[in-house]
Image (cartoon, helix red, strand yellow):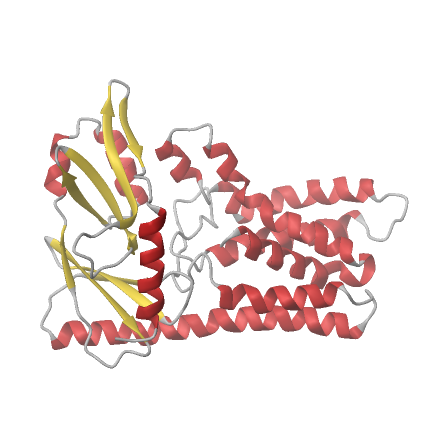
Length: 334
């Protein structure tokens, strides 16, 4: 999830664990704990693009990392507040454990997922919430701010903070239910239109849980579709050729294999002039009904004497305004 959401979740968890004893310091350090796993993005600035993608949401998002870091951070903070002795080293460690571990637990619900069980090669991705979802974050944020303004021993403070945790968790449950409903809608439409397929992958569209997208593997091509819970017309399917054979000419097979692994096999290749683009379909296209499909994660493949490098095409701000406008209109049905 985005940084603000993880800060809010960490603050609420910190308050739930230790707020009554240390007040807003619990929210502060909970919020910090909630942001620590995403520091892996800083390391990515010093690595090649493929490696940076590979390590994101890796070790720092694992249970092992939470278990190892929590006692160390708890000990450091207990030393920082050694004069007040409001909480013990063990209590601070418990706060940091829950602040750290709830971060990847939430990220597991997104499309990218997380390696919660690192070093095992298993990425959890339930794909039931977009990485930025105001309906999840804003009510949660309001509850945390209200709780922060109340005395630490106030029962109302505890209730308000708990309400934020309940609302956010309930929203996740709702999105899981919507994922099930929309999955049924997609598969029913595929059967009704006699479209043969081997796999289907569904996820919410950006910034909401009302509009859902689907990738369908139909053999030598993919089929893309979207569905809003307000739709009144039949689901339309858009055919996208895989064109995997275009990668045969790429010499750096090792780097290419890593990129395919990152995409979990959901990729299509496109060609503009002599330039090849690797499109990661898991994050969808900006507008599947556009004349030219532009994918959210499209990598320009550039072969150099040092091997394969990838570049992300620049996004046009005016084009993105149009995309967001189309998204807003599409949410409310066809």
